[in-house]
Length: 196
Image (cartoon, rainbow, N blue to C red; front, side, top):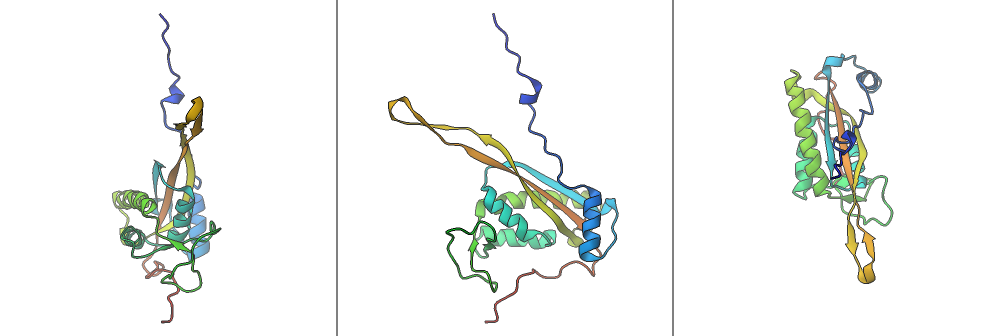
């Protein structure tokens, strides 16, 4: 009788280190907002291996950077209800132009599935901030990063014994926020509204 023992590394989820540490966040807050903060005012959250589009997740991460947690949650809820779009800045090849609520950039999408995943990570970030004793209304998203996760391998059977790969990529979402003084917290979204 042959007994197969699978290695321990195959049972454990792929470990991803944080792409920034607390010193980087403190330096970034000092450069952008001109405020000195401590390591106790930095809060992190991460969501592992969502089955969402990596390109749309990158665009949403770029968009919500600089929002407070409440502003980002409200905007993601509006995206889920198809009321507000997300601007597409990088992956714009063969993309449709839409009527957008801001001025100067017509390429936009409504990534509902990505917004639901971000909403989960934002709730986690909010809970981590309240657990650490921070004022949730003053926590601003300083860093948002996307990492490619494991590839789910599937195959579609075809005629004559062949098969076609039908792989699906996963995405890991990483958010880091910092509690700022009330004077430095952005009061409204950074969109330049249309004059009409």
